[in-house]
Image (cartoon, rainbow, N blue to C red; front, top):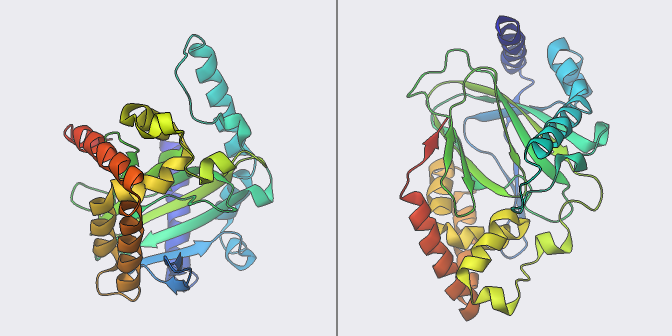
Length: 308
């Protein structure tokens, strides 16, 4: 354990050094509004560097090794763990998320970013790491590098599986959080202290991510009029992204305001969110389904967030 912590601390020290010498830049977020207009905004107090940048990698040997190993070692490890879990639960008949054997390998199949959140309330609003389109992201992995983190420092990752209780993950040192990029909405709480992490996005093999079933809400009429059946279908499907913003309308708006208040882009992002929710309300059958799903969301929230 001590060796693992030392390795994690070495990664953190290299990120801190990159930040000090100016190679970690303000977060840049691509944003397309409801009218299709594209913008580039920054989240306040959040700084990042892309490990695909050779100019960054050549200066930080521990991070460079992490970057190289992520291309195959991480997909192999997750696929092996998934196979073991399937073997241990061979009698399980409930629906499952995509198997991790679908993870791709190679330099182009993963992206790695390092992040330095400097505190002062820096955070992230509700979002999916794979919003659809041509992205092939299947799995998100976040390695936290915060040996001095304490309650009250903030920066917790909040995972919100569709229509289930949220899970609040404390960004403790050498902790790895892993979730499906296209099926788990998440946000990051405001940080009141420095917060360091490494994020790895692992792609799925061609044809396994953002299929037509994933990107279009094509529920049959029998399911549209049966909220329980719709809820069970959407819990495991990436198609949940089509309704997530309307079902969790308040959470999206509140987290967006908390993240971007007073910064360039806040008004545009809020307007786009409101327009997307309003468009859903304009479709009467869909609006009825959303309201039924919101009731199930409220019931799940009665249990409060789980903390780990």
